[in-house]
Image (tube, rainbow, N blue to C red; front, side, top):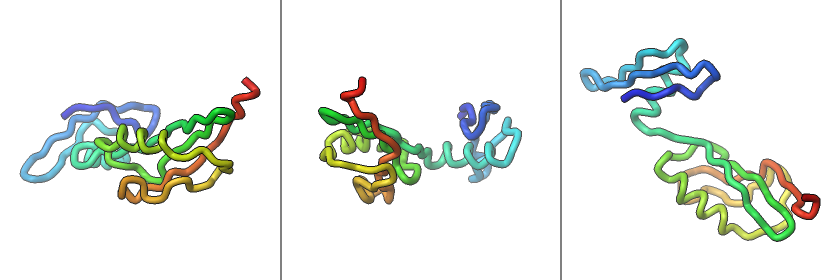
Length: 115
């Protein structure tokens, strides 16, 4: 498998393969790239960001921890269906979304009337 490391701005071109039952990463310039490559090969995860859009306000959200990559769109669909209330930055608006262990946290908001 070949991919680009996204841990830092360098963007190392990684080659990831399984040799003798061990995941081997090459092309990385640091240990973080090796860790990223191993995770990307065995269980790719991502922090998910999403907007929760109401009539008068848009809330910006993110997951508290990385979630399995294959669940990204399912989680986004779930976030978009959450009720619109008066939230503050830092509020947890959904705990343990889809049993991933991740909470959905408000990271910001924008008053749509000011657009």
